[in-house]
Amino acid sequence: MASLASAACVCKRWGRVASDPAVFRRFGSLRRPPLVGVLVTDRGREKFPLYYHDTCFIKAPSRNNPELASAAANGDFYFMHHPDVDDDDEWRLRGCDGGFLLFSLGRYSTDLAVYDPLDRTAVFFKPPHDFRPFRYAIVADEADASFQVIAIQPDPWGDDASVVFSSRTRSWVENGSVRYRFAWPYTDGIAAGRFAYWRSNTKKDCYCEPKEEILVVDTKTMVWSYMTAPVPVGESYCVAHMPEHGGLCIVSSKEQRVLLWVSDANGGWVVKKEVSLLNHFPYLKKLRRDQ
Image (cartoon, rainbow, N blue to C red; front, side, top):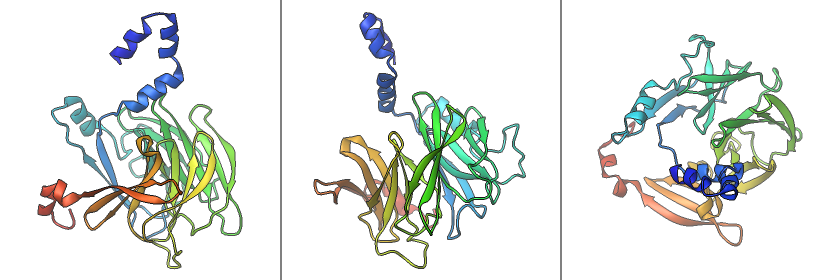
């Protein structure tokens, strides 16, 4: 940050470049903020979010960083201490990105809130429709602390509607429709850089599809597409946005091994890297299975 400020003082032209939003956004994307912790949720085998699931916050090692330790200790990661929230209300975690948490209220998601657990500030808003089930994904822009909430409404008999809520306008706008090619996604979407994705329900659906398909939306262009995961149905995986590997990648895990899959020239997937957890982290051998 100090180097960028010094560059802006060289001349007017450099000052304009250094203060350009695109340059600043790119600068911010290269600065990886420290990890405060990890939220672990147990969604079980039931349809989410029609039930209340357990959420656990695990602090990351502070490495002698007092500010990081203070943030982890004082953050309200369960959305319990905001003045407009009653402890008895069932606010359910629906997603997170860029330090923001997305919550919905109750079994039928009558209200939504995007919460900053460190500053304890919240943006409250209504869902697109009170009587329709939606699956959500939150995508944050860390350059200006704005966010988008993308909602899709699964429809087994036709196209599925999608709408987007923007923190800049505080309103929902229609975003076209997308036709599902797989079982309904009972879980919510997950952010991966500028993208959001919804996994198919093959792991929990008794009528399993023969392959694992992923619904993806580019939040800059709002273009929908599909990817076929290179892992067997039911195997654990997630999607990551890694520009150094060409964009969207897939990280899968099996038998204490983590695999990084990247796209090849033919549109398929190849293993770029494989990590043995037990070899890289010997202390894992001492953990019990439940740990």
